[in-house]
Image (cartoon, rainbow, N blue to C red):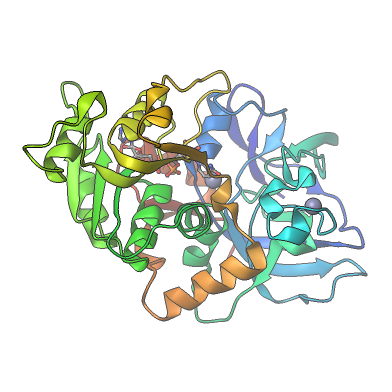
Length: 371
Ligand SMILES: NC(=O)c1ccc[n+]([C@@H]2O[C@H](COP(=O)([O-])OP(=O)(O)OC[C@H]3O[C@@H](n4cnc5c(N)ncnc54)[C@H](O)[C@@H]3O)[C@@H](O)[C@H]2O)c1
Ligand SMILES: [Zn+2]
Ligand SMILES: [Zn+2]
């Protein structure tokens, strides 16, 4: 079979790729569609270090092909959404609603593939840019026939991460205000989750002015174009002032209750912290290089009780959050189809990368095999 393989320097479509048989608790899935998340590009450009050769792709949907002897919740032929949390199901965190903290699910690289007969790594326990892959049974969440797999595949990372960051990592509710940096596949899902939760103002910020229409379609009430010479902190305080009279000291007043960094840049994160209202929370979602640090004023925490928290894949509980997302999609509360700007043949993956880097995509989806 073929798949998109990172060789340590670059990525290319490679033939002569094979995947081993599923073990007793594993499932072999034929991938139909897989979304291109920025994290795949971050492997190729070295921002996310990963052993090579590795089969990329970590946001997918497909059809169950074979199941291990101990697997009962899916059968061959089932349509499934695939995610990345190969959590163990046994540990303290798995059993207290925190599978994203399961040690088995962190950095879970293994070598289920061979390339030209030599062992090859998976990526994020996933590797959905290949015609077939083998995953832990728990990574398969069955869905009905009413969602196109081209839309459903996006749930596995971008939707879970964006929606879960709001639903599972914050207490954002009716009347709250939020900033979302980065109107990509993840940021759009943060925006629509804020809307579902009843946020009063949702300010989207992106360097690409053309992202405004997408941001507003998903629920943004305001849009700020970031870039050289733009003080995004001042722009947000102007949109959400406290009052003109009050003396507020070096930490300002007004601003937002939540700021989500869906970019992955220290300066963005610092701006996120500085534009919070007192007591507000900045949520780190974007992934910069492993050496990146936060250049934050500590007074943000000691003087005005701002918070800085992280989100790994929206801290999701796959078999609860994925059916919830599907249900909200069916009710018209969450958009999935509108996230798919364009589909590409797997062989044409470079066009998808080009369009993502050019700021043209909500998400690009690779058609890996026929539905
Ligand atoms: N924490 C997690 O579990 C998790 C999961 C998925 C993705 N990610 C990370 O989230 C980030 C976003 O992923 P994505 O797939 O949505 O990417 P994307 O490329 O689709 O979107 C990124 C957006 O940020 C914008 N942008 C770039 N620089 C900016 C700046 N300085 N200010 C404002 N906007 C800026 C781009 O124009 C683009 O619209 C990436 O770093 C990715 O690795 C993290
Ligand atoms: Zn991702
Ligand atoms: Zn566990």
